[in-house]
Image (cartoon, rainbow, N blue to C red; front, side):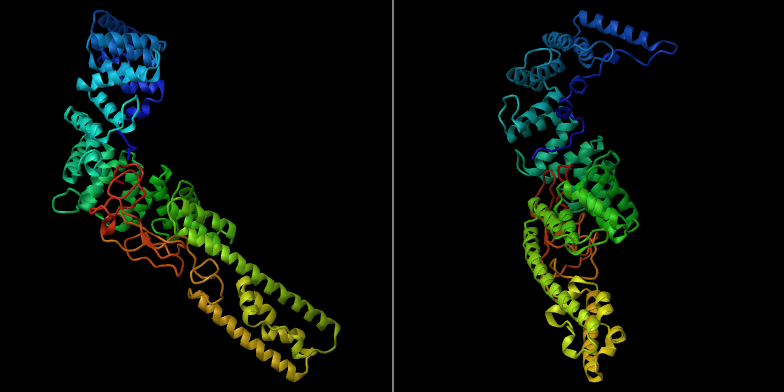
Amino acid sequence: PQPTYTSQGTERELKKPVTRARARCQVPGVNVLGAAMPKETSVEKVIKDRLDKLREAAAAGDGKAMSDLGATYAIGEVVPQSWTEAFSWFQSAADAQYTLAFLNLAGCYRDGDGVAKDTSKAAEWYLKAATADEPRAIEVMAQLCLTGECGISKDQREAAVWYKKGAAAGSLECLYHWGVSCATGRGVDKDYPEAAEAFRVAAEAGHPGAALDLGHCLMNGLGIAGGPKMTMAVKAYMQAAEAGVPDAMYHLGIAYVAGLGVRRQDNAGAKWLMAASRAGHPTAMNELAQLYVTGRGVDGDLDAAVMWYRKSAELGNPESAAALGSAYGAGVGPIKVDLDESAKWFRLAAKNGMPEAQDAVRDIEKEKVIRQQRQKVVDAHESAWEVFVAAAAAQASLCAADVPVPTGDTLRALLATNEPKKVRARWGPDAFSAKYGTKFPPDDLDSVLEKLTELMEYVTKQTVARMGGHNTSGGGGGGGVGNEPSALPLGRPRPGTSVGPVSPARTALPRVPEVGPSPGARGGGGAQPRSRPGTTIGVSRGLSADGGGGDRGLPSYGGIGTLG
């Protein structure tokens, strides 16, 4: 898989003309000739003097000056932008065998800047520049071998050869990607020690992506003598996080929350998870939402939890989508029960990699039928009650047989669709006797009140059971959407793990969130939790020592670092 992070961003910056010129030219304009700007001299005069010197050097055949002058025209900050002039000077510099000009010419041919677009010529100049050991050209050649652009065949082995060559030539980016190749087996045999060493050297030179991936190696003991070194991993994550890498912020936050390589600090964990979330990291949003549910490191706030779950789900995180599906199925905090909305989020979870969420969708469809049937029972009871009320108003006396005391399925349906206090308000013995007692003969009234006392005992028993988390109201199956549990926090269970930022579990009906490495409580029924599938190394995937997840698996939804 193609890494999404690069420190210099050559391939990304080639998309825009001005930035493209900066990225592929050695220097951004005329400042190449100037030392510190003299005091008491106007900026315009300094620029003019330096530009004049640059033109003189270029006219004298200085290859570097010609290439820099071309860059000045390409950028268009101190002179009107002109790709035609830029291309002409790049060509002259190339004729003078200035190797960076080869790379600049290749870019012009690739994008059609100042010359007709010609990808075959672009490939020729890229190859010529790379063969001349121009580091940036080597980086681009390796990328072209991975992407198959400019008519160059996709070849991971050839890309790895170029990355290794570029690393030897001093390219920090190539050194990093050489580590990626060794770690992922992309074009070479897997070699974790070689990868870890490449990441170490690149990280020490300031490469944020390498620092992140070094952190993963240290956290999991990949290529690390003596096994995992979590304290050092946290330092590597910190380096990358402070450089602005969202995935590093996420892993650092998890390390603080779980107490991995550092003393557990919920506030610090929440801070870094918030930073990663604001930078658009879906999994960090999911973890942050759970902190808002449990009140760890932040004030408990279900509205904030729902907001972050929603953002995460919309960015493709299946756990967050399942959490919202569960919330809409049961009704949590600011969310009211809405089975159609619940099914929508579970379908999204299934689409984004949680197949067991489809079981929840089927459960919801069954629950819809159950609720429709239940409503018919309730409607029939309401009709019987209206008949009783009318009779009580019109008749001087009533008998026990006239009272539609709810029992069995009718009572369970009432408890499932109404709050117990509403049932008590209608059927409480004292309230019923005060309102209708004078209509009954004494024996009949005693018979009715005895039934109502039994009814209230059942209602109380069911209420206590539900407060204890046990559903006995019927419908939907254990742990399904049709249940009426008393504690319904958003989130999902998480099994305990021994090492590494926790590898979360999945479940179709998430219940109790557990952010730390301790065993999480499992929701009753539904699909049972399972660990995320482990992958070795690659974009947006986890990393494990044995290549198959396991106890040392990292969270599988990284997204920036190659190993994350």
